[in-house]
Length: 572
Image 1 (cartoon, one colour):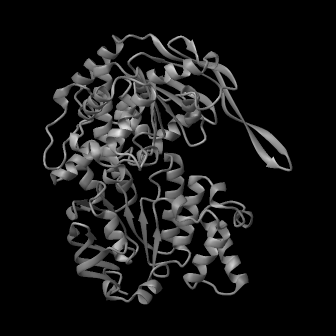
Image 2 (cartoon, rainbow, N blue to C red):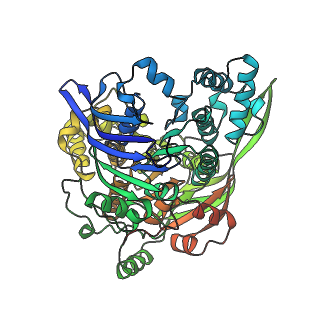
Image 3 (cartoon, rainbow, N blue to C red):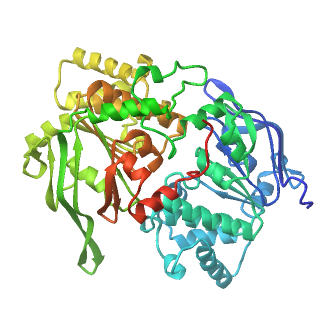
C-alpha cells in the first residue's frame, strides 16, 4: 500500500440504533482519514459518537445497531459491506482492538493464559500448542509483564488494573495489526501507571508501524499522544486538525468549552460565586475553571478567613490486614502506616496517590466501614473507635459518602425518589410527606428536573447519576462528605459541572469535604489542602498552592509530571 494513501478512510458514515421509540441515528455523515503509522485521537463527551464510530469500523455494534450509509474503507476495501465471517478475519488480524474496562472484558473464570492463547489462535498467529504457548509468553513480555510464564496461570482478579490493561494491549497487538483501535484504554488508571502503559503502547506500535485510533475524553492525553485530533459532538465532527493547534486555538464553541473545562496545573480553585456560572445553553451549560489573578487573590483571602476548627483529626492511624497465603498461613499487610492530618471546617482536603497508597482505606475507616488497627480518627472531637452502634448511626447522619461508580452504588431496582429518600427512611426522619418534600428540594439543590423522581438509574447519564448520589448524600443535611474518586469516571464537561456543584454546595451549606482521588489536576480546582500518600504513608502535605507550586518530594514531582498534557499550554 502507498504510504501517502490513507490506511483507513471513513466517508459520510451514518449509523444508528433501533429503540422502542423507533430508529435513532447516532452518527450523521462522519468523515476522516488515518494514515499508515499515524495516531489519531477522537475526543468528546459521552454520547458524542466517538465509541460508536470505533465499534462501527469493525462491526462490534450491538444487535440493535447498524450502519445505514457511507463507507469504511480499509486499504481500499469497504468493511461495512463484508459478511460476518469476512469481518472476523479482519478483526484482530488486521485491526486490533483494546476495550475500555479490562475487568469486564476478561473472563473472570478463565486464566490469563487461556484467554491470551485463545486470541492468538483466533488471529492465526500460531496454531500448534507449543507455538501458541511460546507466543503467549512473548505477548505478555512485550506488554511489560514480568515473569510471564507464571502470569499465564493466574486469573484476572489476581492482577492490578494496570496489569489487566497490559494483557488487553498485548492481545490487541498479538497479530501485529496495521491499525489498533484503543477505546479509553487507561481512563480508570493512575496517572503514573497510565504513562507507563501508554509509553509501552507507543513503543510497540512504533516498532510495527501500527496506526492508532485513540478514543478518549482526556484532551491533555489526546494532545500528548496523537498527532491529529478529531472533536465529536452529538454524532458530528465539529473540529479536526493538529492536536496542539486545536488545544491552543480551538475554533468551535464546543471545543472551546472542552478546553475550558479540562482541569490542568494552570487551573485555579473553583469559585463558588453564582456569577461564574453561565446560563445553560443548547450545549448544556458552561463552567470556567480558570479565573483572573484578582479573583484568585480574593479567594485566597476568603479561605484564610474561614473557621480553621478541625472537624476531622487523624492521629497515628494504622491499618493492618491479614492476608491468607494458603496452608493456613497468613501474613500482615500494612495498608496505612502512622498517618496524621486534620481537615478544617468548611474546607476540602484531598488525599492523593496511586492505587494501593492507602487513601481509600482511610476513607473507609473514617466512615466506619473498616476497623482501625491503631491510632485514632476523631470527628468533631468524638473518637470513632470508642463509639457504640448508636453513636455510629448518629455520626452517619453527619457524615455521608459519595462513591466512584454511581451506577454501582445506586440500587437499579429503585426509582430516583426512593434512592434519594432512603437515608431519611433509615434514620426515621419526618413523615412520608415531609420526606417527599425533602426529595424534591434535593433535586433542585443538585440542579436536576423534578421529572426524574420516578425514573431509574439506567435511564440517566453518568453525570445525572452522580448528581443523584450527591443528593442522597445531602439528604440528612450532613456536615461532612467523603468523596471517593467521585468524578474520576466522568467526561470533562460533566466533571466540571459536578466540581462546580460541589463548590457551590460547600459555600452554601458550609460542608467539609474529604476528597479521595488519583487525579491531581482535579485536586488543583477543588482542594484547599493536599495530603500525598505512597504505600500507606504520607510523603508530603500542605496547601494546594504550595504542593503544586513547590513540591518537595520526588514522588510528588513524579505525580505532577505524569499528568497528561501538563506541559501543553491550553487556550486562555
